[in-house]
Amino acid sequence: MAQARDLGRRYIKAFLKGFFVAVPVTVTFLDRVACVARVEGASMQPSLNPGGGQASDVVLLNHWSVRNYEVQRGDIVSLV
Image (cartoon, rainbow, N blue to C red; front, side, top):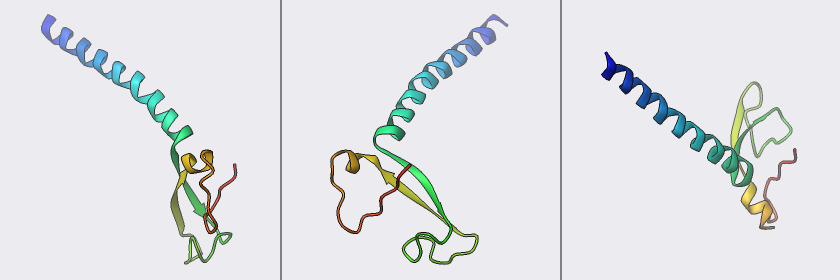
């Protein structure tokens, strides 16, 4: 019984260590490097969401290029 309790504590401790490392790394990545966004509606047709209707496209927003002023003609820019 004591071994099962120790095993459970080890699993919980390992989970918490992983959780407290993964959350800040993920938040930093999404804030500084890139994030995923959904494009809905006809505002970006025909480049994105060409079918219209209820369909939506998923895009990767690259924060890194914007911070380094690497935006070029023809790039799609998203403002929040």
